[in-house]
Length: 163
Image 1 (spheres, rainbow, N blue to C red):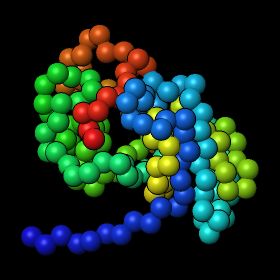
Image 2: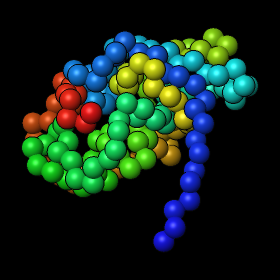
Image 3: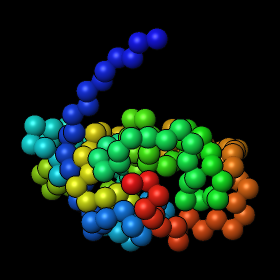
Protein backbone atom coordinates (compact mmCIF):
# COMPACT_ATOMS: atom_id res chain seq x y z
CA UNK A 1 0.00 0.00 0.00
CA UNK A 2 1.46 3.34 -0.98
CA UNK A 3 1.18 6.41 1.20
CA UNK A 4 0.60 9.82 -0.27
CA UNK A 5 2.50 12.82 1.02
CA UNK A 6 0.34 15.64 2.33
CA UNK A 7 1.98 18.97 2.88
CA UNK A 8 0.32 21.14 5.48
CA UNK A 9 1.23 24.80 5.68
CA UNK A 10 0.80 26.62 8.99
CA UNK A 11 -1.69 29.50 8.94
CA UNK A 12 -0.22 31.11 12.04
CA UNK A 13 1.61 30.71 15.34
CA UNK A 14 0.16 30.07 18.80
CA UNK A 15 1.69 32.15 21.60
CA UNK A 16 1.36 30.90 25.19
CA UNK A 17 3.18 31.28 28.52
CA UNK A 18 4.59 27.72 28.21
CA UNK A 19 8.25 27.66 27.20
CA UNK A 20 8.75 23.96 27.98
CA UNK A 21 6.50 20.92 28.14
CA UNK A 22 7.33 20.11 31.76
CA UNK A 23 4.43 20.93 34.08
CA UNK A 24 2.27 22.24 31.22
CA UNK A 25 -1.51 21.54 31.32
CA UNK A 26 -2.31 18.50 29.19
CA UNK A 27 -5.85 19.53 28.20
CA UNK A 28 -7.71 22.87 27.93
CA UNK A 29 -9.78 21.90 31.00
CA UNK A 30 -6.55 22.08 33.04
CA UNK A 31 -5.75 25.52 31.57
CA UNK A 32 -9.01 27.33 32.35
CA UNK A 33 -7.36 30.65 33.29
CA UNK A 34 -4.40 30.49 30.90
CA UNK A 35 -4.53 33.14 28.18
CA UNK A 36 -2.65 33.27 24.93
CA UNK A 37 -2.80 34.69 21.43
CA UNK A 38 -2.80 33.33 17.94
CA UNK A 39 -0.99 35.29 15.27
CA UNK A 40 -2.64 34.52 11.93
CA UNK A 41 -0.37 35.13 8.96
CA UNK A 42 -1.54 38.20 6.98
CA UNK A 43 -2.48 36.20 3.88
CA UNK A 44 -5.09 34.28 5.95
CA UNK A 45 -6.54 37.23 7.92
CA UNK A 46 -9.58 37.55 5.65
CA UNK A 47 -10.61 34.04 6.69
CA UNK A 48 -11.29 35.33 10.23
CA UNK A 49 -14.45 37.14 9.07
CA UNK A 50 -17.36 36.33 11.46
CA UNK A 51 -15.25 34.10 13.73
CA UNK A 52 -15.63 36.62 16.60
CA UNK A 53 -19.31 35.59 16.84
CA UNK A 54 -18.30 32.22 18.36
CA UNK A 55 -17.48 31.69 22.03
CA UNK A 56 -15.11 28.76 21.40
CA UNK A 57 -12.90 27.57 18.58
CA UNK A 58 -11.07 24.33 17.91
CA UNK A 59 -7.40 24.65 17.01
CA UNK A 60 -5.51 22.08 14.95
CA UNK A 61 -1.76 22.36 15.36
CA UNK A 62 1.55 20.61 14.79
CA UNK A 63 3.40 19.10 17.76
CA UNK A 64 6.58 20.71 16.43
CA UNK A 65 8.85 19.59 19.29
CA UNK A 66 7.94 15.90 19.03
CA UNK A 67 10.31 13.61 17.14
CA UNK A 68 9.20 10.21 15.94
CA UNK A 69 6.14 8.37 17.18
CA UNK A 70 5.15 5.42 19.34
CA UNK A 71 2.26 3.04 18.60
CA UNK A 72 1.93 2.18 22.30
CA UNK A 73 2.22 4.83 25.00
CA UNK A 74 1.69 5.20 28.72
CA UNK A 75 -0.54 8.31 28.79
CA UNK A 76 -0.53 10.93 31.51
CA UNK A 77 -3.83 9.64 32.85
CA UNK A 78 -2.90 5.97 33.35
CA UNK A 79 -0.08 3.70 34.47
CA UNK A 80 -0.37 1.10 31.68
CA UNK A 81 0.26 1.27 27.94
CA UNK A 82 -2.48 1.86 25.40
CA UNK A 83 -2.46 2.12 21.61
CA UNK A 84 -1.65 5.66 20.49
CA UNK A 85 -5.04 5.99 18.78
CA UNK A 86 -6.80 5.25 22.09
CA UNK A 87 -5.04 8.22 23.72
CA UNK A 88 -4.50 11.93 23.20
CA UNK A 89 -0.76 11.57 23.66
CA UNK A 90 1.34 13.79 21.38
CA UNK A 91 3.83 11.20 20.03
CA UNK A 92 1.62 10.39 17.02
CA UNK A 93 2.46 9.33 13.45
CA UNK A 94 1.36 12.73 12.11
CA UNK A 95 2.02 14.84 15.25
CA UNK A 96 -1.27 16.73 14.99
CA UNK A 97 -2.97 18.09 18.10
CA UNK A 98 -6.28 19.75 18.75
CA UNK A 99 -7.64 21.93 21.53
CA UNK A 100 -10.97 23.65 21.95
CA UNK A 101 -10.35 27.05 23.52
CA UNK A 102 -12.40 30.07 24.55
CA UNK A 103 -12.32 32.93 22.05
CA UNK A 104 -11.95 36.27 23.86
CA UNK A 105 -11.50 38.74 20.99
CA UNK A 106 -9.97 39.33 17.57
CA UNK A 107 -7.87 42.36 16.63
CA UNK A 108 -6.94 42.29 12.94
CA UNK A 109 -4.85 39.09 12.65
CA UNK A 110 -4.44 38.48 16.40
CA UNK A 111 -6.88 36.16 18.17
CA UNK A 112 -7.01 36.40 21.97
CA UNK A 113 -7.87 33.08 23.60
CA UNK A 114 -8.23 31.41 26.99
CA UNK A 115 -7.88 27.77 28.10
CA UNK A 116 -4.78 27.19 25.97
CA UNK A 117 -2.68 24.11 26.67
CA UNK A 118 0.07 24.18 24.04
CA UNK A 119 3.72 25.10 23.86
CA UNK A 120 4.65 28.68 22.89
CA UNK A 121 5.53 28.95 19.20
CA UNK A 122 3.34 26.02 18.12
CA UNK A 123 2.48 26.16 14.39
CA UNK A 124 -1.30 26.48 13.82
CA UNK A 125 -2.65 24.35 10.99
CA UNK A 126 -6.36 25.24 11.07
CA UNK A 127 -9.23 26.73 13.09
CA UNK A 128 -12.82 25.55 13.20
CA UNK A 129 -15.67 27.14 15.13
CA UNK A 130 -17.03 25.09 18.02
CA UNK A 131 -20.75 24.48 17.57
CA UNK A 132 -22.31 22.69 20.55
CA UNK A 133 -25.21 21.22 18.55
CA UNK A 134 -22.72 19.44 16.27
CA UNK A 135 -19.68 18.96 18.50
CA UNK A 136 -21.17 17.69 21.78
CA UNK A 137 -22.35 14.11 22.17
CA UNK A 138 -24.50 12.42 24.78
CA UNK A 139 -24.37 8.80 25.97
CA UNK A 140 -20.70 8.35 25.12
CA UNK A 141 -18.07 5.88 26.31
CA UNK A 142 -14.52 6.90 27.20
CA UNK A 143 -12.85 3.48 27.06
CA UNK A 144 -10.05 3.01 29.59
CA UNK A 145 -10.60 6.56 30.90
CA UNK A 146 -13.98 5.50 32.28
CA UNK A 147 -12.05 3.27 34.72
CA UNK A 148 -10.17 6.26 36.15
CA UNK A 149 -12.53 7.05 39.03
CA UNK A 150 -10.33 9.72 40.66
CA UNK A 151 -9.36 11.51 37.46
CA UNK A 152 -8.91 15.23 38.11
CA UNK A 153 -8.30 16.59 34.63
CA UNK A 154 -7.94 20.17 35.85
CA UNK A 155 -4.90 19.14 37.94
CA UNK A 156 -3.02 17.08 35.33
CA UNK A 157 0.32 18.41 34.06
CA UNK A 158 2.79 17.09 31.51
CA UNK A 159 6.22 15.66 32.15
CA UNK A 160 9.07 14.61 29.86
CA UNK A 161 7.70 11.22 28.76
CA UNK A 162 6.92 12.33 25.18
CA UNK A 163 10.10 14.18 24.23
